[in-house]
Image (cartoon, rainbow, N blue to C red):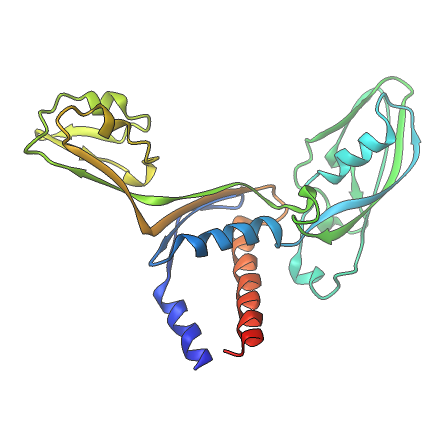
Length: 264
């Protein structure tokens, strides 16, 4: 009974990538309720593990910044997180070293890992400016953590979702005045063959500017609560697809534990 219920839930929800890059995803969820998509969003923010620098030993720092500021900046640098390796060793620590002397700018790329697979991907994040004869020498230790502990362990940024836009146009009322076209901030409305049409409806922000400006009440804008578009970026520590996959696995385990606790 329990397994059958899970299978039904899996088959009912549909998921489609509208756009997918290493650091960005735009996803369409169909036949799903907002609370479930929000659960995925919260899991991606708070529970997906990633690497971040936690401990820093500074041997020499004659820059203009205090040691604590340097350590904080190091902690916020996105580090490549290979969960397939780290999941079997949650207490593992990745060690980095940094040694620079001015005059120069110290960048994230100056952090050197013991193993090259852990080297920082974005090498152009500035850490501190060193003047002539100033030095920065340190060791750093990165560990796994989650966003609910500190923002430095949050791999997803700018995440949000909206209902799938639906725009109804009554051509019997529409006089093709084009006010709605001029008012639309997304430029998705146009006239073709004496008809007002919608282009790229998924770009609609549901602002209802077109509906409000129409004096003929020819346009109705609404969101479909059973179809939801989610989009987000990553900080580069994990790919957009990896974050979603990990979040769904974590959420599945939580629901599984809840079912067992309730004796379902």
